[in-house]
Length: 144
Image (cartoon, rainbow, N blue to C red):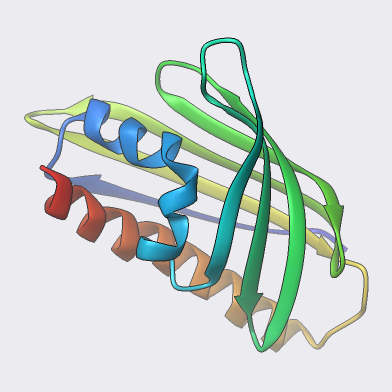
């Protein structure tokens, strides 16, 4: 059964800086603890990442994933193509201006191939959501 987690937060950096961080998917391991590696396999015509290979560890489980990314001026969206542990994953960042900074909305939906206790799944999602907030905020502070 698919489970969804969301968070919204403000960052003291312009939306352009947040989108620059998200576009730099190969830097994910630097600011997102669960990401052990991220490699761009193909790019869209505009040079933005299209297909990405990533290794992620959450709730004690390591997963090798291939993800397809789509981009707009203020969104970063991805969907799962292949995974050793997941049957489905959809994620989305939406970045909007707020004063001198940015407001970020993050949503992640996953469905595991194997059945795990709900507590473990929720813990893994909590880590993902907290990483999205804390890691992205810290990286934005470092870059701006």
